[in-house]
Image (tube, rainbow, N blue to C red; front, side):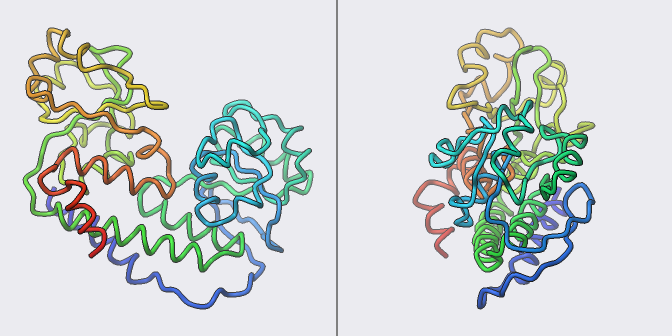
Length: 315
């Protein structure tokens, strides 16, 4: 676990060192490799962009590209301005005709909701598609840089990545020597006897580790897995984090206290149950930093009170 934490900090610091600012370079046409391993040629700066994924939409607005966004999915709800953009349909059922009607010169997707079979159809119509689907914190930062390059705002992307890398590294460094706290993250509690949680390879697992926690599902066989009630009771987490959707918790503290097994867990006995904004920890965009801050405050409030966290981030 110590090596894992050191490895995360080393990666973040290496990214921070390599990121530099300077004059905004002119856009250079080129071929880029997206997250599906596809070679995509970008010949000119895109001016009409359709973003199918909430995290990509958030990134575009963070890079100052909101005025170029001409279409988003119904799930793109941040920032507020994104809600005013024309809808291309539901995330899982986007409308090709609506996308084409927006006359985009670039469509950004994750290759999941807008599936692999739809992408060739759009490209056959002369619409460039780029798949952005990072699988790690490092991948999020690299994809922000990629978006900056293909949209002609490389300087802004580098500055954003530099700021994010600095905040990630500072929080990880602050928590490095803190005692490990056992954490269980509840992603879906429809079945309290077999709740879904975040395992290795998930953003949550990485964020919990950076913040000084020990994810009790770190050795599970996948990023999102079901944890049996027997496993949960045996691991006896000291903190339980509950994913919220649109501000609504998927399970309440009262429900956990009423369950004969959950109520015997240390976290429930001590009332250490925290609600975490799911959009901050599950979306692969700039707000992942805020997700880390929320998790850090829950795990080590003695290190990350609002005042202390402000001093850490300002240092």
